[in-house]
Image 1 (cartoon, rainbow, N blue to C red):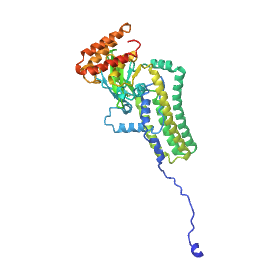
Image 2 (tube, one colour):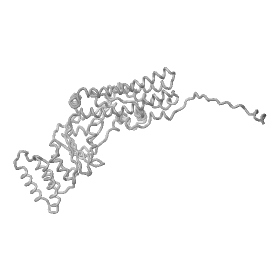
Image 3 (cartoon, rainbow, N blue to C red):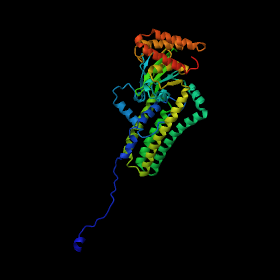
Image 4 (cartoon, helix red, strand yellow):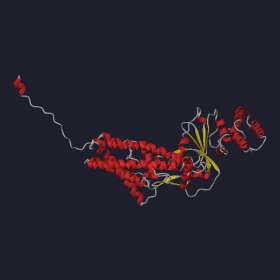
Length: 438
């Protein structure tokens, strides 16, 4: 037995060394889809708030996808005359379907994008239990203001110190991101880790390209040159799919300029050079994320993931700061809500007679725009509201005048619509009780 055991071969545990190139699924985290990335890249290219602050595009999770998509779009473009940056900005543009009397209902869409993000909170208002009868009226007096005017507005609402703190915070977020990438590159050199150096070098190059782009506006808002200076109030009505109606009120000139605004990219050798630098550096960074991660030292892998996490969280904070500054830079927004209405006619009456005078819907033809059924009683209701709106507030017997006009309205309607007409009169009187004067 001993001899048989002695004949067994001696086994020795030995670690196998592997110096080959491998790929790490963890590196895919750098190129995961992130819906916030496209918006951030579009803000980088437009820099619409130049003069107020500079938007920092960070190396967050998925941050290299936009340049990679731009490169693919350029190499495989079906419409080669449309620049990829225009498509990038168009992806972040929401076209609001509206019914309007702007230029005789020629314009049936209004663009909501980075240039008018201050409207986002107004459009997403909280409805009541009957959202179909909820209105929000927004006065669009100046859609596109000069930089000097916007600076003045933000100083008045936030104060000069708070504005500068917000601006410096955005700059600091960008600088910290660059410092982290540069530090990672230096650590890669000191530890003789070629993979880490390559990864952080490419990401540092892409960050540097973003900084260079932030000093100019690659894509600008194009506003038509020849628009008639018509200051008569017009209306554009947006009915939300989730319920609730947003009514834009403003001069014909402002609403038409808004409806006709588009993005434009003026090709120059400087812009084209920056665009290709940003696109190629971002593409190589995305590729290196997958190829370099597993071959890096563990500590540097964690450092790179820390950069991605920092950038993703910092972008959320930067978005909140930018939104606050842009809203305050627009200045005072005349807006009012009409909520908790049992009927649509009640909402229309309140929006015409009760809300803030600047927001009242005088001259809005609800029937013609398809917002009320084409019934004679509603057409006469519009005439009644117009007559009541024209009553001077200084008249001593205004209430008696309103009573007279309501009686005339009841006498003129068709007998088959008498019940509906009586309800409208009751709603008018109920609305006027909340007014101190008419």
